[in-house]
Image (cartoon, rainbow, N blue to C red; front, side, top):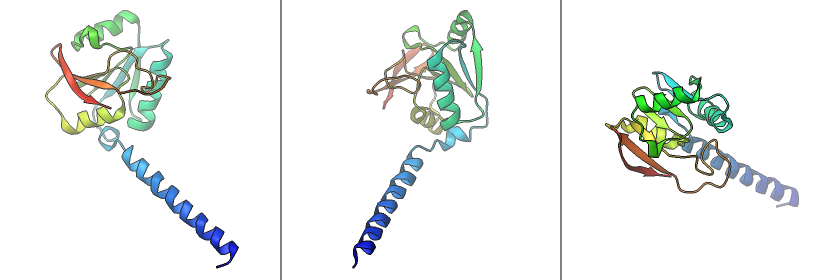
Length: 160
């Protein structure tokens, strides 16, 4: 085998490897249930919040492009959280309503996909605060704890 054939062979193997991992990672990051959700999806956020804008773009780009972004004033957002009985300890800077569920905060799409697939008998899920490395937030990703919420009671639901 000549040097040129050897280089072409190695190049082909590298290309096949790259394609394999690219296709595999695309499949792993597919959020089909969320992307095909037929009901209303609205992200309620403050107009001036930069991290909320980044999260909304992430959600529309990777989750569901039909998501409506609704800008609210501070008190309106607080009233929405109260309406959905989101415990104060679990509040974050924005609230997403997907059908009958709420999703509070910078929750990764993996958790939202699970919520829509499993359809648990809860009001919603929440990831309190603004954790470093969460979608829309700068920094290094740590372990995310997502809580299941039902009538102001909550418990750990999953970790990512």
